[in-house]
Length: 243
Image (cartoon, rainbow, N blue to C red; front, top):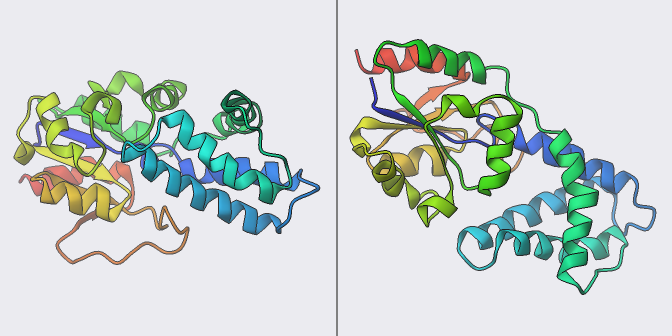
């Protein structure tokens, strides 16, 4: 059995994509002066989130600033003026977006049964969350669903000084384990599985049947990729792998 199992959070433990689309869908439906159809606005928001999140992870801006950059691009298409003040942009994001977004968080139903099974294993692995998200927001998600108690650590770029995929080696050092004794479980084939394997960990792909970025079908994985369709399959999968 592995010494440490790292879990991705968004798309693995919590349905981030659905929460984003539900939230921004409500906002664009109530925008009388929008310059594009609602479906185009939703797609634009999702694209801007990815673009500016990458800038944040690359150290090009703060977490708050990546929200502001998104709004500066999005508000003109929504048909609203763009405030010059960062504080007003922050207020728009908090009042118009975050309130609904947080209410839209949903934990996948296979998460807690998986964690309970792993916790009951004799000499079972230590568990940690390894996520590129904001530490305060990610811990709030875990707390909302009673998941914090299962994890020895919640590791983000703030703690590690780097984001995935660079952060795998640092995360292993943080958890005082060798990469060869660590497993990373996530829904993103490249960044959660293939990159983890390149860093010496065992990557396990949680294929939920949807591409997190595009919303289309899952990507095609190489034959040697370890794949599960439900987190509740993980304990048995680990037992077979280590048999």
